[in-house]
Length: 145
Image 1 (cartoon, rainbow, N blue to C red):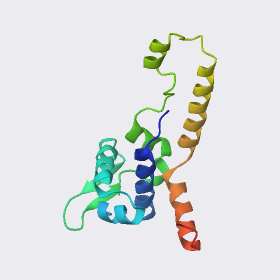
Image 2 (image 1 turned 90 degrees about the vertical axis):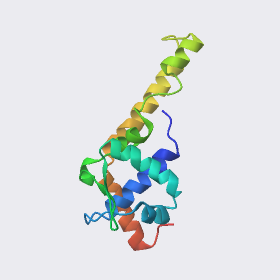
Image 3 (image 1 turned 120 degrees about the vertical axis):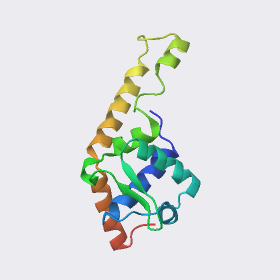
Image 4 (image 1 turned 180 degrees about the horizontal axis):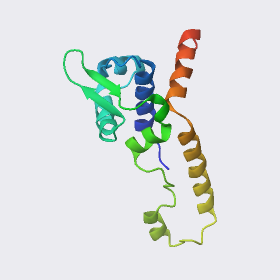
């Protein structure tokens, strides 16, 4: 399992879209400014998020991005896998197992499998909607950074 800045920034961008769920498109420039995500990097993330069907792009002067599904139907796992690929243990992936030669004879492999399963459970049980509501509450209380 390898999570990169793609997941971090992608999740922040999706939370921003969910917080602005009025149905109006939100420009990448606005999201970039509010979430402090480099604009070019954000554009790359939106390409992957569009390909996965999580967002839609609207062209024109009032264009931008909208969620393609309800925020209640989008999980953190959906976002992470759209940006990073399938969630699986990286440490004991098939390429490394072939190099180390341990195969099924490695006690540590179970630890990495369990860690990945735990992360998957957290990601699949956390919806974009719940994160957006939490962010809105933080914004209202002035707790956000």
